[in-house]
Length: 470
Image 1 (cartoon, rainbow, N blue to C red):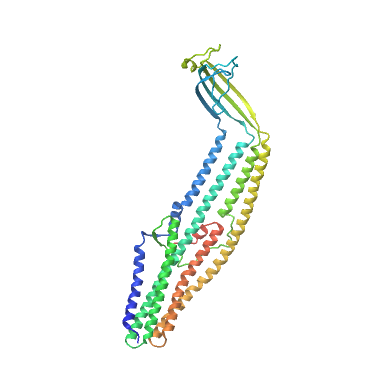
Image 2 (tube, rainbow, N blue to C red):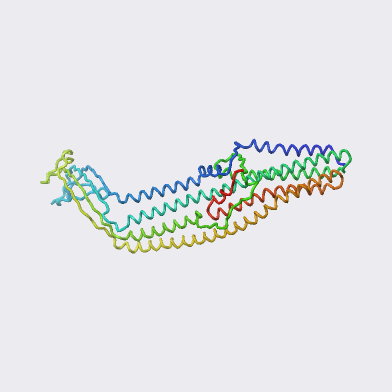
């Protein structure tokens, strides 16, 4: 005869284990938030660091576009310098100041003269392009194409992250549902164990039934703990995607647990997928870059206007003044206007190779675009096939639950009346738990399959439009 005191202690420990983890699990969380899918998506887009990084890159590309337009703005350089130097070949030394000063030369002295004098030189130089043979326009077009690529990358980052958030949402939802299913199964197993224990104590059932029933309770408890573990794993991922770690989310089931998606995905195409847009814009940018390199070989026609003022401590007769102030007073003024034509003819050798390099970039991106089309087409075909199968499976789930529920109730009644053994009852208990879990899993699979279609087609609204609030 089994030790009934040992069985009562075991049941008490199992019941305590059932109650404590849920309480500990809730206490371990910093915060609890109930959230629906749209709020989760909006929160993720606003908070996730990678999306912010993509936005910063797009903003940087936009600034480069603005910078390229400044090529039309003339260059205005101002210079003012005071010097104290010898002058054996120049009537007062000056520093060319990165080439912006206009040289003023004088005669060469008959012999070395170590006398020094002060001088002042001031100039204003205005220069700008008259005609650049399309080089400036080509540079602007290249930067604008790069901005389009950065924007496409930003939109793709948002889209891909929305897919991740939605997938994590569905996983959290299904594991929260499975946790409830396993909790109900544990409760049923505990109720049966209590009935069996009473029957064993009264001598109506053999003692081995009590031990076997306790084992079923333990198995149900293990399944329950496994569901908590799985939910916790996806809670952490979901919180990471939202930029809200340490938060426990109660996700709104909306229509995911009660309805199947009703949508026509047969007309879905991959042309609007953000990945396609990235490569198309990158190819356009490569072509404009190649055009800019090619045009950089062409000459430039510029204008020049400058005004200059000069003071020197050396007189026109070559007399030196030791007074510093004599050299910093302006004594002569000049101006100059003109145009100049600049063309580095031998750049053709370098430009030719750079142009070919840019065109190979175009070939590379075209090949990557074709590969992306193949991958997305495969993904879309597979997702549509999986969606059809998932819906067919989900339609069978209610039938399975109904039959399993009836079978369990009948088996329980038969066992209590002595017409069935415990093995049959345990088997029906397992079948019912499995049917309830399958119901949640298959319904969830249909929505995840629809999400896969939306991911391949590049249209999250294909999924969101099929979701109706509960």
